[in-house]
Image 1: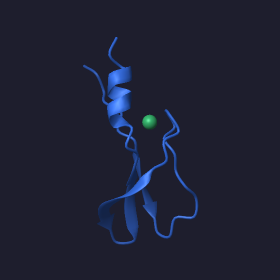
Image 2: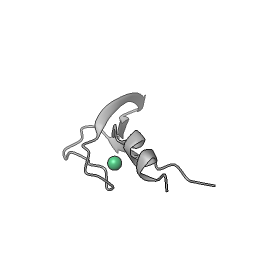
Image 3: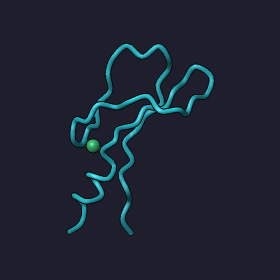
Length: 55
Ligand SMILES: [Zn+2]
């Protein structure tokens, strides 16, 4: 079974530093998911990692 790498991280607002994907350096962007003052940040590089993982 393959574990799909899902780049993302919960962060408290305000966020002072720009997060980047540890795998490819893609900057995270703020997603629409928010709980209280914590916002979900994610990178748009998931498809890239999935394709990279194909044998
Ligand atoms: Zn990435």
